[in-house]
Figure 1 (cartoon, rainbow, N blue to C red):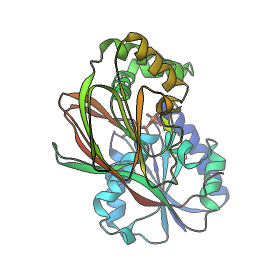
Figure 2 (figure 1 turned 45 degrees about the horizontal axis):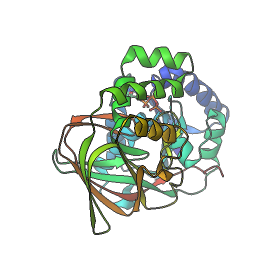
Figure 3 (figure 1 turned 180 degrees about the vertical axis):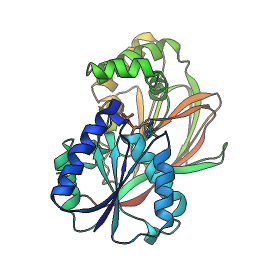
Figure 4 (figure 1 turned 45 degrees about the vertical axis):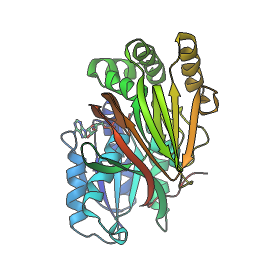
Length: 315
Ligand SMILES: Nc1ncnc2c1ncn2[C@@H]1O[C@H](COP(=O)(O)OP(=O)(O)OP(=O)(O)O)[C@@H](O)[C@H]1O
């Protein structure tokens, strides 16, 4: 097996550089066949992946060393070229970002040497559920590994991506704390919005939506569980919608979110479906796998598909 390795050394506030150094010395020691591609600007991984897919590689695994954003962009860069499922080059992942939610959802060790072992010991690709979306207003389509959120969580990401804030708080290892602190700020600023959801032949109208997250597994933000029962092994899409009624109820919702119990709350609606369509009628923040989608209108259809991962999941 040959490994094409895409490394975003900037991920995890630069921690990915150390991770890559550990992984590289192990690969050299074990005399593994590999090539490395270091990214040097945002989205570069998408371009590299696209070029690799054009080469119709066989007996090759594409390994991403970075965070959820680097993995997301790599997957989408590959899929732009890979029309047929039998062309798909398997992926693998060594977490080196700040959140690493896909690693939590799939069962990949946070220890680089162990994550590498999960790759090198694999003897087949694991067909893994991933999310698929189309957005009708901007005529976009793509894939996600973790989640798509509109409103609350996306507004938090937009704030957290302010470079000074993220670096300062991550350096102090206050990722989860920072996330919740931003959440309080977002509650002050964010207006509830109208949302129409169609699933299983039913239509639900929400007048004061606030949290809208479709997810492939439980994890979001800095390791919070948005829907604790969601499983990557389940091909269904889980989505939670929570409305904002008043201050007390909103704080209760945030408390449930922080404790990983939001989807069980009487203030949230949990969908567990194969396909879901939803629209907003106002400009809202969106995020996909922690990457900003911008402030925009949404007309989304979300379902699931599969992608091969050449990595043994941890139990
Ligand atoms: N060389 C680079 N310099 C700056 N940004 C880069 C570079 N290479 C990739 N990027 C961009 O960095 C962004 C964030 O990467 P990523 O999400 O992997 O790291 P992270 O934010 O630290 O981790 P996580 O999402 O797990 O919290 C992505 O949008 C990616 O395109």
